[in-house]
Image (cartoon, rainbow, N blue to C red; front, top):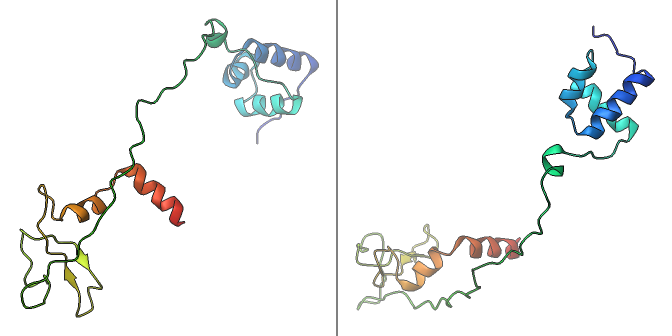
Length: 152
């Protein structure tokens, strides 16, 4: 069982002085002896002692902070204009059985439905999607975050 330390008037005065000098609770506990860091923190709160000087800060001159300037300018995203999916001569669309690496793989519809198909248009720039679907799939991170906030 730990022995409780009595806070005598002298020890409280010592605590106040050390706190005002900017010592940490651990340093004060070591200086006082027989008391833990947590006991020092508790006593400081019970005494209602305000913040203290921090030697590292008080020795440095305070310089005015420069205003933050963002070099980024807001560029609205290009509108996504989707075209109708590719329709073959027989009226069908690209399916799992007919899709190839020269066709946009953007899924359209419910995969469990018979009408499920892919866009099928020509992909752009090494993407598996056509230009419109690539813009939809690869949105900048901030734009995705903003859309999530609006939806929620």
